[in-house]
Amino acid sequence: MKKRPVDIVVISDVHLGTYGCHAKELLKYLKSIKPKEVILNGDIIDIWQFSKRYWPKSHMKVIKLIMEWISKGVKVHYITGNHDEMLRKFVGFKLGSFTIVNKVLLTVDDKKMWFFHGDVFDVTMQHSKWIAKLGAKGYDLLIVLNRMVNSVSKKFGKGPVSMSKKIKNSVKSAVKFINNFEQIAADIAIENEYDYVVCGHIHQPEMREIKTAKGEVMYLNSGDWIENLTALEYNNSEWVLYKYLEDTLVINEEEEEDSEQMEMLEKNQLFESLVKEFQILSEPKSQD
Image (tube, rainbow, N blue to C red):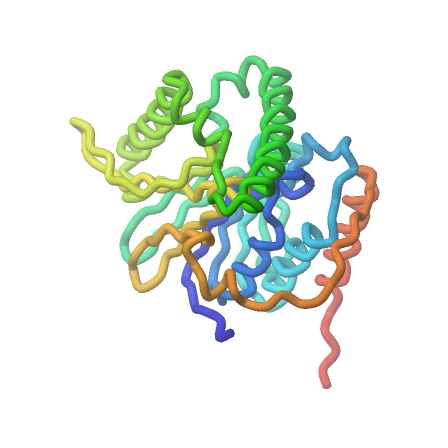
């Protein structure tokens, strides 16, 4: 399949290292595009959950593909999130076209764009991190249960359901939190005269204009690769919300034959593996 050119792609909330992560689907999507610039907008690797020592081969393949992009000179910005906050110690790190940052500011086609994860707006994250971590474990368990339910549902010829989505949509406090999150992001963006504000964190894909008495801004959220399987793409001076579940061409693309083997890694083993990959990446290429 011919790779689709994209000027900027934004991916967030992949949560590599958790049972809910759809790494195989993400890999198929990433292989289908040819981006000039990549914004990894937080929670790509779920460091909170590494104690489970769950690291399938497909999760490492996602990392390796991103590293291949870096080796080819594709700009890759890794914006830190709350689940990969350990990387905030390395903010400012740069290797070739790869950087670790807390935010990204771009001016494209005379439009000012502000990219950041968004956990700074989460009161639970600021004051009760242990509650947030407990919630993350419960969410991951719910996703595993949801997959089992959908597996049974499929056998009876019924479509998939998202239990967590139904819970979020039915709980008024969850809806209010999402609305507040979007409004706060928009207010600050308008105050700073940005044309676009691009977030992740709340797993709620969105593209909408928000107006206030002080101005207007385009609010974008890239969603996640746990439930929604979405990303944001900027091409031909236009933002588009990509939805994997609606992309039949990519879904039907044949996968490489490769048995999914579980790599049981301790946290330090995983980082050693990533460091080795970066060392290979930074080695000067021989001239033939």
